[in-house]
Image 1: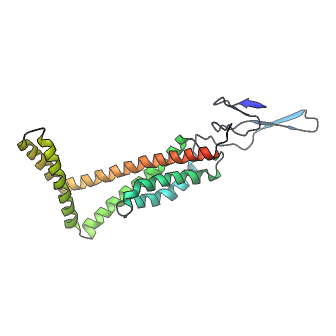
Image 2: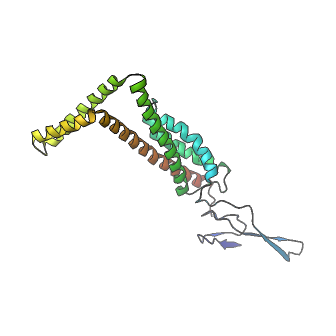
Image 3: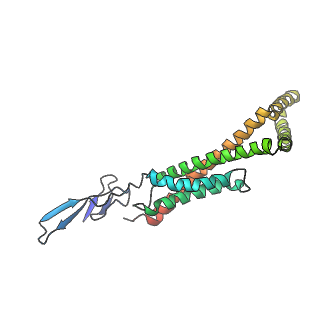
Amino acid sequence: MEITCTRCHQTILADNTYCPACGLPQLVCSAEGGTGTSVAEHLIEPVRDAGSVDWKAALRVVLMLAVPAGILSSEATPFGLLGMFWMAAAAALAVFLYLRRQRPGWITMGAGARIGLVTGLLGGWLAFAISGSSLYMQRFVFHQADQIDGEWKTALVASQELTQQWMAGMSTPEMAHAQSAKAQAWMLSPGGHAGWAAFGFACDALFLLFFAVAGGALGARIMARTRRPQV
């Protein structure tokens, strides 16, 4: 006998404990007794909605993976250039580990993206904090301010030359030179340098967050394809 899910209206078998399409728990009736005249209606163990997240269980794996991913994604390590990969992999793995003991053993892409979002927020914030702390330590504890400022000035002068050439075609050379000099003077100041560094770290954290969300959604998609029952 077949019944219809009350949520998504998909046709499912009468003895299914949950809808294979949306994960909604189902009522299962069983007949007990020799004659079959007494019918006891009961609920099988509740099954989690595939579109929801048990955050108590999810946060355990998220914390376990977001911390190393955030450390590897920071600019204090030689692996920081692969930060987007680390964060996407951590979010996808968090979804896999979260689903090991869940029923059903798959979730929607939206639920996976939410797990990835939390992973990205924690990992991105940690990467931002470590990168900023590392820059502070290099400048004030290890006294590498001259080296840092020299590298920053070299990169800034090269960037300003390109910008000045681009602006020369839009305004007079005198105006372009004045605007370029003003911008360069601000960015070479301590406040400008610190602000630009913080802006760069924040942009990196946003990229990490984006790839974590994508990784969580991809992990949920893969698990749904491999574990989702077919109607």
